[in-house]
Amino acid sequence: MNVIQTDVVVVGGGVTGVVAALVASRAGAKTILLESRTFVGGNATTGLCLHSFLTRDRRQVVFGLAQEIVERLQALGGSVGHVPYDGFVSAVTPVDGDIFRVAVTEMLAEAGVQIIYGCNVVGAEANDGYVSHLTVAMKGGLRRIEANSFIDSTGDGDVAAYAGATVRIGDSKTGKMQPVSMLMRFFNVDTRRIAQEIGEVNPAMATKDGGEPFPVYFNGTFSKWNDVIREEKIFPNEDHKVFFNTTWPNQINVNTSAVFNVDGTDPVALSKATVDLTRQVRKAGDFLKKHVPGFENGYYIPAIFAGVRETRNILGEYEIQDEDVLSGRKFEDTIGEICFPVDIHDPDTGQAHFHDIGGDGAFDVPYRSLVPKGFSNMLVAGRCISATSFAHGATRNMAPCMVTGEAAGVAAARALRTNTPVANIDVPGLQKELNEGGVYLGSKAA
Ligand SMILES: Cc1cc2nc3c(=O)[nH]c(=O)nc-3n(C[C@H](O)[C@H](O)[C@H](O)COP(=O)(O)OP(=O)(O)OC[C@H]3O[C@@H](n4cnc5c(N)ncnc54)[C@H](O)[C@@H]3O)c2cc1C
Image 1 (cartoon, rainbow, N blue to C red):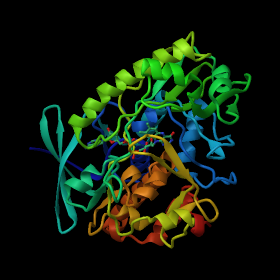
Image 2 (cartoon, protein in one colour; image 1 turned 120 degrees about the vertical axis):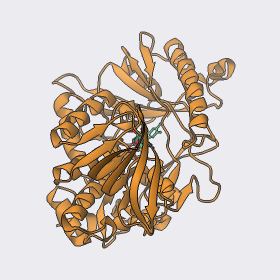
Image 3 (cartoon, rainbow, N blue to C red; image 1 turned 180 degrees about the vertical axis):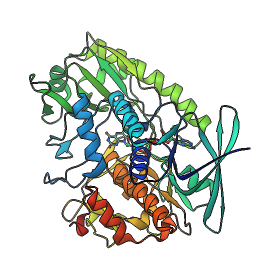
């Protein structure tokens, strides 16, 4: 079997892996990013808001690489920055999914990261908590990848699971997972009109290129159309919820589909759900065009993959608890802060429930929640870090994913420089480096 060797291997090129690979490479580690798809950006490419940089009282707590990406996107027309909103959050950060993909691809190239697309990690060998190599499947067959440190940013915790780490799947009590959904992007629409018809509260408004303000984020329900929805069987329930965001005055991303009881780690189940979601999106798109003012002249494209909200979370040296979120807890080994409320889409109905973060509106992420219990040279970052299913409702969102990705990447490069297993690096040194990179460390802020 062909062998590839490097310093740091990052598996999964979503928001988390992109950030982890960028900072590891910038810090001097020879870094390879493995991605099973043919593009980077993961779920961010479907056209969403990067939730959330600002606390409920509009205090920004997420900076670092995440903020750098937003600024890069702004320069390319793919972001309208952080925009005030008076809904379940106090500010939103919508981004264009395609421009996100382009921007981060360029940033990775500038940083010297080697990306290998179409590369699926299918196995990991570990002894006494030390990962010796990964097995990957790619065109040409199986290969072996060796590295000093491994970062699992697959969202699903694939690498950790293959290596034998302890994982939980779905809700702690029931094992149920939040539904999977597929976004759609509508072009040539009247976003102001749509916001008037559907927005529950005033939409978040932004301007671009000196133009008129336009709505960039709002949500609501299709209650006005309950009769037609029932008759034409558009959605399974009445008062169906819908979330909108955009960075353009005449386009809108629509998030309203759902398939339930899907295990996102099972490719057969996820494939079936993808077919079902594509059909759902088609039906919903036709309904919007026919019945909802503002959409009548529009045309739409379903996202090219199904988005998965929840699968595995690893058990780390520390598991973020419900109370840590509800009290806005601070930790000695913080690597950054999370301020997005807990957002759980009910596994049976799909309806979203939000729970605010307590204390000062943000909680610290302890470094230990990135370290799979008993492992020395592997970190997990992003959606699958060590957190209860309730806490995962907050940690799974994209600003938190970038915060943990940045810490993992900096830590892996530091482990190499100091010749220390990544699980045992000196955390104050890591915090200093993160702080110098612009990361806000909450209770340890300089
Ligand atoms: C429908 C939906 C709407 C959402 N809305 C929002 C929102 O508005 N705002 C927000 O902040 N968050 C939102 N989220 C949550 C958020 O988008 C994700 O939790 C987050 O993007 C996860 O980032 P990640 O980097 O951990 O994983 P991903 O973005 O899933 O990236 C993981 C990457 O790893 C690759 N990969 C996986 N397994 C392997 C393997 N074995 N080998 C190689 N590569 C692999 C995948 O192809 C993928 O590119 C939403 C999620 C969904 C599903």
